[in-house]
Length: 250
Length: 330
Image (cartoon, rainbow over all chains, first blue to last red; front, side, top):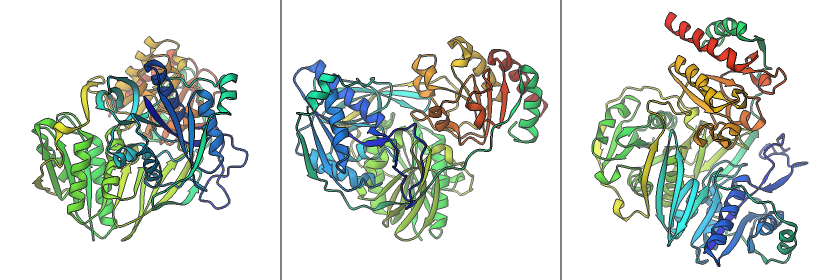
């Protein structure tokens, strides 16, 4: 199968973040960037489908500045065949503008399946995958926790609030991937060497009009320092008293 | 003055709580943009029209009922097409939906159909003018709060369920009917099966109280203690850490944290949870946090308003009994 995986380069989620001088972005100094967690699950899913189904091609796309080339190489070192950078100076916080750039590129690709992460850690918006599906007029499943492809059709499971649904869909399709579906493989040394020779193409991104912008960013208010009220079951009456009289939640 | 179109989510023929929250957010948006009307669309099988009254009680002026026997399960393609068709037909300032499993599917599709900008997982709605709408949206797993501006006369706004409290705003909604704008039989995606969680359980996004368990419970069967404590509150949902859901003690959908659900209940009780940064990302905006853990240096105690150091297996049953007594005393 011909599978496209659209990935994003995001900072390590365990970082301590600071707001940048412009106050409209984070301070990137000292942060480690890598392929977004959910996108790495999507790469793994694509590789597994093509390994299972025989001859296929896995092509990785990323929108962004030249720093995304390193992230594309990472996905190629996991086993993807080639990478495409859709070049922009920065990635806007406008999912629709980004989706238009990807859809313009993907529409002539003849893809059976286009995979995304459920959302990216930084913008946490979950827009691009579904918007690409609509732009391409593909079926779409979001936040899949299981995915099977057979005979030109797909079956996926997705979690609902307090329930789960199993859906069947026609190909071509967009599927966005939730965690728990597959553990991303570590690139082997051989994979890393091979990735250096795989094709990586750079094209200008045809972003849609950017209509959503960041006006300001701030860190959430710190919680007041924690308080230990006692030890063991003997502290329960004091807890009940505080929940009733101070927190007023009981 | 412009109107607001709201998607009122259902499961089967029943309204979901997010529907009322979306109407509340729609009401606030309509008032902020000069006092327009709130139009709520509800789509489902026969019987779904009964939702109109409740939507009115929460501030809908018009309820657009899309009733079709084929809509027994959520049909994202039909809902998106019908919402977009309605949005095109009226002079709306915004389309409001929930950032839920359904909303993830519907929102971006509607935005593309309308070529309207979309903002998702919105926790607060700010200033609204004729061509600018400002919202608050947490990113970086709630570690950074962004203020976003969406430019345009029509914007799709998807709201975080746990950030909004449904507010009654008694109106009597006028009911209109509308046919689906796409043929349900032509959908490329079909729901084969819906497996419900336990009957009568409250969703994590709706629950005012959440009792969560972690590895400190030592064994999956000890989650019974957490369930009993939740039952004592009566309005509580049960959550879990990723360690516990990865080990299969609890379903993946119960996971609270950076990659799971992000919640902000009135009261969050962390039982046997050390407080890894990924877990804190999912619950640190809770109003009051209680932690029970045997390690006094566990990071959870840094965010807990009230911490008790000790063995959860010994403390929780005593707490459950005390909560039952406190509830009975009211």
